[in-house]
Length: 67
Length: 458
Image 1 (cartoon, each protein chain N blue to C red):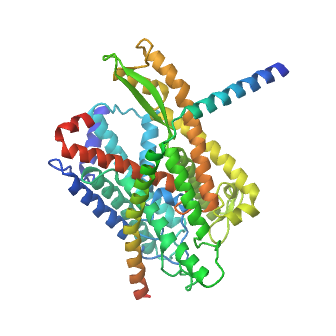
Image 2 (image 1 turned 180 degrees about the vertical axis):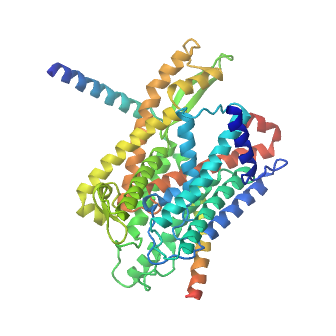
């Protein structure tokens, strides 16, 4: 029983080391690429969000008139 | 027999509401205008309340609202629910070959899309009926009112279906993604900056930042407002989640490849680290929402073995109590056990759905190897043989699928626990969507400037 146990632990350890190796291998975004992505997505969210913000504000004003 | 079904299907397809394809290629500017128009209509429809609501409104999509878009209580209460659910069901049917669709032939593809649309239309009415009959908008006594409310929700679902087609055919990008990004972006900006007063206590701003500034000026800055009102700490966590998401979205695993025909040509095949991207979180969250929906239907019949609900419609006990994320730090602190159980179940589900989704949608090592082999790619320094390609991909795809799935689950749970605005899943989805829009825009603009260049871009 202990021997099977050992094998299982061994396989688990090799699996974990394999996964961490793949994780290290993955290319992390460079500073320039990172700043581009974050700027672009931030602008996109603010742009779309502002249209939504304005239309929601208008609807709140209309409802306040109604109430 | 098959011909009869074919004939029957064709006759139905002719009656389906269809957005006609534009005659000639529309230039980019006009397509952006179409998308902006659909965006505005989406926001306006989300503000039109359903006629006939009595008493309190319960949002059955509560945990999922960031993904399902729409606005509870409005015409778009169902958001993209019916359309997305129909898509997932068709994907599973086709992927698991329960129903054979040969997607290669145009006729096969047409019947696949036609069936998907029929399913989506049915789901509009089906989900609307669950909403109203389940008592989400109170229990009006007149059956006419019940029928009319179901009709309004179903129409909302159909409008989303049509608007999605307009965006996909006449506009820019995909309609579903646009509405998800629209809903999340609006929520973030509204909950952060709104000067409107909260209906619950009228002297409080809804927006976290205006409220914080007011409390700051009044002398005692309020960091955590509690209750449903967003606060400055949530804005802070929103930024943290955003920063992490942009970083993870950028992580790639580059497989060195060389092009068989030209000796020197070297290239890299980028595998996104978030390989199954946020599909696992959507499926896990959808599963939880459906379990909760099922529990609601059971409790309204008096059967409580899935769990019970408190008077606000939130889960109080039983299985569903542990399958709903605690939405703020306070709840997290005084109910750690619930948070731990939720986290364990949620992460396990995300990992499982990641692996399942990859197999079902042909992103596994075998299919990707076949695709690369077909386009003449090979691993440099090895013979050009699909088994080698497959072996290399098999070393990388399973780990990043699993790690990506777990990471996405952890991030979504972290954002849910800290109450990040727009929820973790919402931010993850929206960052991915907006960045793909940017890439598409850049590609199209290049295509517009140099038409000859367009074939190369594909």
